[in-house]
Structures are given as structure tokens and as C-alpha cells.
Image (cartoon, rainbow, N blue to C red; front, top):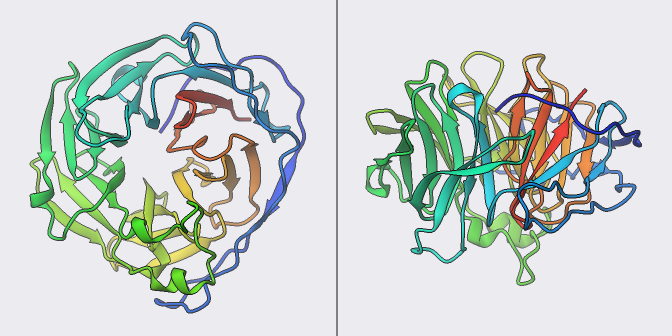
Length: 353
């Protein structure tokens, strides 16, 4: 995900974090890797009421002195989840609407990151989540189906749940295959078993963690609607969330939600290799041209960058709280991240160095 602009000048504090690069773990570990130790943010984020699309909210906590400008937050709509650049570099954001299934109030909206101007692009979706752009079509996951949307906003179903070779519970993120002839889509797996009665993720070393079955998958969907399994279930990717194409040819990078594993998937061999761990509730993941990996945590309201091998994590943004950092867009040309905040109904524009 990617593109333009920088805003008000700010000097901020560097918060560092440590995470251990982990070599491939056993397929069914009885003791998952310990989470990375992450420094606490200097101050919580402060976000304004998203009532006026013309007025930016107050900046979130910026945890990197590398960034030349403070972040700006724009209202977008109820429960935004994912952002991607499509035709002519325009930013498209999935807006889920109400959480109740069947209301069909989900939309895809466009956002001008410089002005905050928002317009409706496609309507009549249920709870749209992951977005991918093939070069010709915008692809959106929506619970158990996948939509194909053209440049006018007209949509058609690319794949219903019946097209998948295994039962589908919750489709999440999407990324276009190089060349644009297909997309990769994540199926989350047994997400109903990952939280305790209070809504927190079970401890990684708990009996409940070991009881979570591995049934998350990655599917490849051609533009003709043919669905095949691209990555089989693994305890390294116990609950699939974010997905992106890796810089190494023939690989995907996956953000595993429960343990917080950043995993490289070799599409030719099926091997799944943990690059780093401890980013619990990992949601969005992107890799820059220089190999830098960016990852967000949905529950922690934070964004990090790590190097191509999962080393040297640095905290870039923090303090947004649960739901504050969903599936973001990496705009390399514009040197920024655009981060949907599902809780507040906004998009945070975070400049990068």
C-alpha cells in the first residue's frame, strides 16, 4: 500500500522495542516464543471528534524522531478497516458500518490525505475488510465472500463461500499477486477461541492457547473466481490477519494475530518461517522496497518497523488504544502510512522519514 504529503513540523521522542528474530519453530509448539518487550508510549494519543471531515483531529503520539512532521487524523466513517491505493493513486478505505451482519451498510470510500475530503465509491457491502488493487480491479473481502469492483464503483461477487475448498469463517486481508492476475486472501481460522471472557487474548503459554486449532489459511483467487489453497494451516500462523507480497520472489509476509508472529511464507515449498514474534494482535503488514517491514497491532494501538529479517524493531506510533491501528497503507512515494482507526472512525496519516 502507498503515496503523497507531509504536514506540521514536530520533534518527538524515540521509543525503542526489542524483539527476537526467530528461526523456524516446530510445527506444534508447546511453548510459543515469548512476546517482544516494548517500551511504553511517552503520552497517550489524543484524537478529535470525527464529526467534521474538513477539520483534522489532534495528532496521535508520534514515537519516532525520524518523522519530519506530526501525524494528522481525518474522519472517514464507521469502523474503517483497510486502505489501499488504486486508480490514479487515489486512496480507498473499507468502511464496515455497523457490526451486525446482514445490514449491507458497508462501503468503500475515497480519501484525499492532504485535505481530508471523503467521497463514497461503492456501497451495499456487508462488513468489508481487506482491500487489494490488481491494476484493473479493486478487490474487497466481506465476511465469507470476495467482491470485485471496477473503476466506476460497480461490483460483482468474485468468490462466494461455496467456491472455497474448505469451510470459511472469516476472510480478512487481501493483496494482489504480482502481475495482477490473482489476489491472496487470508482466512482467520478459529478466531472465536483466541480471547478470554473479558475480550483479551489468552496468554500465549495458557492451556487455552494450545487448544486453539490450526485452521487458518491463505487462498489464491484468480480474476475468474477460481480459489485454491496457497498456504496450509500451521501453528506459526494460528490466526491469520494481515498479508502482503514479500520482497523475496515467491514469498508472502503474514501478520499472525494470536502470537504476534511475522511469518514469511514460501509459496513454492509451503514452508512458513517466523521472522519475529511478540507483536500480539498483529493486523496490517507491509514491506518497503528497501526491505523494511511495517506492522500494526489492533489491540495495542501501535505501529512498528523492523528490518527485513525481523530485527531491530522501532515503535513509530502508540497510544491509540484497542482498534486504533488496523490494516494500513504504506505510501512509499509519499513517505507515509495511512492507518484506519476502527474505534474512532478515522484515518491517521503518519509521515515517515
